[in-house]
Structures are given as structure tokens and as C-alpha cells.
Length: 216
Image (tube, one colour):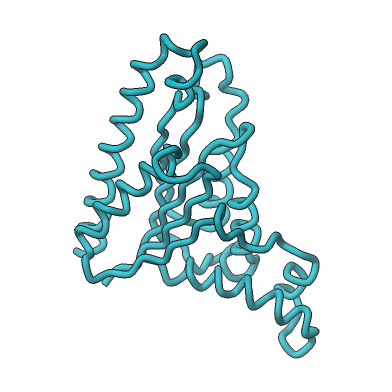
């Protein structure tokens, strides 16, 4: 049966987080299609992975026989994360916008799994694996909006996930999530509600479609 790698990175818990809530809807629909399947779950806010160190980085470019004990220990942590990605039939990532970019915990995960000659390079080891990113944000950074130039989530993740790791990337973007809590954005609440509803619908639909595609 299929394996889903599910990663959350929002600092907010449960329903307080749009990325977690929409990702949970995706996962629920996925599990309904794959009741006997496997879900590998990582909550990077609750259990952060180590930030990349000199030993962890250099170990990837050192032949095993020449690695120090420090190299071996640090690299073993990276290999575990890399193998989770390689074993997944599909990947689900909650990537809320924090100060115009992704959470540092998610960046740490990416730094660990990106290894030239294995997951990156001519033939990336997870190439073609479908990845769905829930890219929530408090405002709107869509083309044509005043803050279009501040969008560093989708652009960055497209460069890393699609162009470097070779994954089959798809975004779901719940936006204007601050509207219900910010009086200055009160007139945007209807747009927020529409965006939220669309995100949940997309999550359910895409999860089912992906599950059916992988089962075919």
C-alpha cells in the first residue's frame, strides 16, 4: 500500500493553524482511500530536526571509510530523513508563511534532505514523487497584489522541491488568514472565507485523485 510522508511546520497548534487544518483534511481523504497504508508524520514545530552542521554537510561529500565518528552520527540523522522522502509515494507539506518565507524548521528539513549526488543532481532519488504544499498566509501575495514582491514561499519551494529535488509539485494556498483577527482587514473576511473553503475542497479532491492515480 501507498506511503504518505506528512510534514507540518506551523508554530500554531491544531485548528489555530490554517496549514495544519487543510493538511489534516488532505490526510483524512488520503487515509480513507488507503486504510491499510502508511503515514510517516513529522511535526517540525514540536520535534525540530537538527539544523545542518559542518559535520552533517561535509559527511555527505566524504567517503564512508574516511568519516569521523562525528561525521557518522550527524550523517545518520540526515540519512533517516532522506530515506523517509525516498520511501514515500506522496508527500504533504504544511508551509505557512512566516515573515514572508517558510518556517526555519522546514528550511532545516530541506537542508538535511537535499544531498547532491543522491536527492539532487542528474537523477534525484525521489524524482517524480508528487508533493502537495499547503502554503497558507495571513495576507495575499498573489500576482497583481501590492505585496506580490514579498512572496518567498512558493518561489523558493518551487526552486527546491521541483527544480532541485525533481518532485511533482502542487500548491494549495489558503490566504488572508489574518482577516478574521485583524480589524483593519475586516472587509476581506468574505474573501478569506472563500479561500478557506476552496482550500479544503482542493485538499479533499486532490488527495482522492492522487490516491486513485497511485493505485491505478
